[in-house]
Image 1 (cartoon, rainbow, N blue to C red):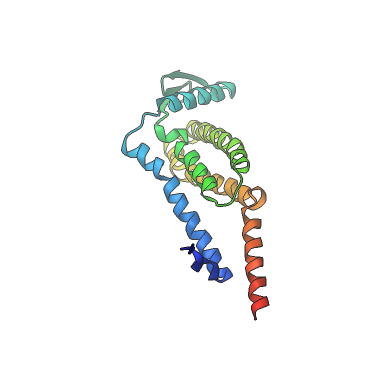
Image 2: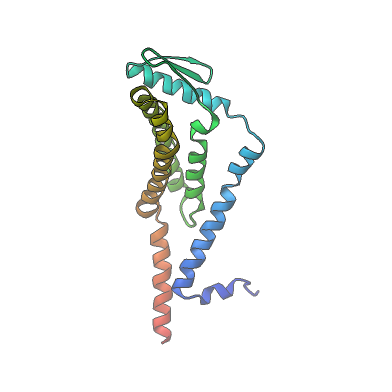
Length: 197
């Protein structure tokens, strides 16, 4: 039987790396489709909003703020009263889904290693998101709404993206084993090429 992919075996090590990158990107795009489905079909994430609101309320009250929750709305009482909503985007669902997609887009990794990445990464993203909201409230109480919006729109969004990429990078380079498997294949291909010449 003829292998329709036999032409892939004749690729140079650089072409093999490029092929692995393209496969990774294709898998990442496919695994990101749920993100667009949730947005397109307006999936209700109220349960996550309420969970985040409850966690934020607990952290705020533990830190000494006088705060009250009404559904997904939190009111800070006292010197500078402030009410804000935990919207769907405040739940970090996109960040968690993207981290999931990054982990599962890598080829040649054992399921156990992927699940370990999710077991550590997803709760860490959740906690950092709660911390993000807490810090924004602190900035609002100390420096006003304009400063809080800057932290919300610029600083913490970049911070969450950086967190996701660092978490994935640490997992990929230290724990996934994917890089070592790729290097081994390249070494074998390079050695075959040396033997032929």
